Length: 304
Image (cartoon, rainbow, N blue to C red; front, side):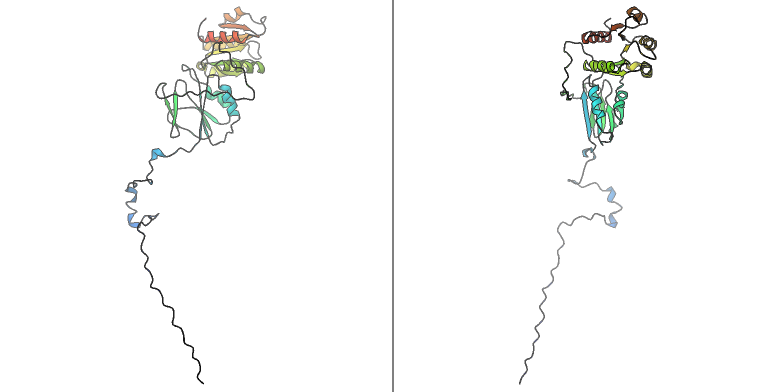
């Protein structure tokens, strides 16, 4: 009997290997070839989206700019008191200032924040967690993260007035009252409630006010920068130094400076005694808003 023989099937034929074609536009290597290392730094960037001009680079630091009228110190105070000192932003504050006098705005604002407050300079780079204030009689712009200062009239100016937002609406200062133009007043009264009330009133009338509740401290502040202040308003009966004593010291340094003495006790000092030492005006407490605003305006405008 014949046996069935197993016939081995032939191995499958292999398809011929295809040759890979190199890509028509090979991606450039992220690392230059060794022979090109020597001259790669001297080659200009190719045209197209890969070439980025340095002046077109974006400035990544967030910069917050805030403008205010002459009575805006209170708004700046509220903003800085509620702003964390490490927000990572730069702040540029632009109050309305008297162009004829130097400004104490950085010193005033430093009381309300742990951030460093400086007066702006031309080409000064804005840094995070710092506050910058515009100098008097200057316009300011921001370009590439640096402050650019110029004289008034050189460039465009945009003024936008926004309503003041607070928990309760305050009655605006009457339009009929004479208003200030950002003049800096040193206000001295040892009664905190009176000090705060007068400060708020004068700021609403357009003045910048540095309020001090200690006459000796007020003298030290004045002596440090006597040319910055344009007027002194002082109470008379205060511990350590009376208003008359403070007036004598101030006038020894600045004989031209107008001083308004306000007191609630006429028997302690008379108007003649006050004017004998150089005090320009004498008011008894309480004075009306109309009286105070007109006296302050008259003294600052030298209409004696």
